[in-house]
Length: 118
Image (cartoon, rainbow, N blue to C red):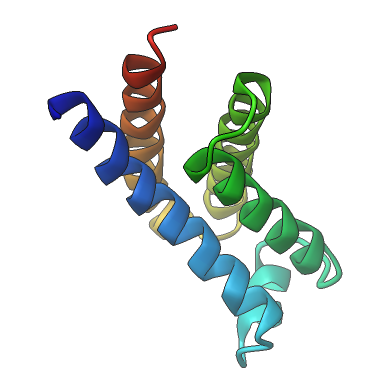
């Protein structure tokens, strides 16, 4: 039971944050494209990024092959690190907030490894 909680809590937080941002990308919420442009990314990357976040969430939360889960965690880490780099370069005052996402990712991946017994 304890291992399952250590898996589900951080993974739901991680996937929830990623999918929520993907929904914002697809919903054309005012300011989303402008914020993305401020970070140095072109607007058309929103849809690729949003799709990757949704597919990664499906792979993490549902029973799929172990390799696919590993790729989903790796993809989420790359997205988080690239967001951190963009914040550091374009909005240095906001850069430390990415540490929260890195910590949640570490806890989520650690919980997955405990449950999967890899």
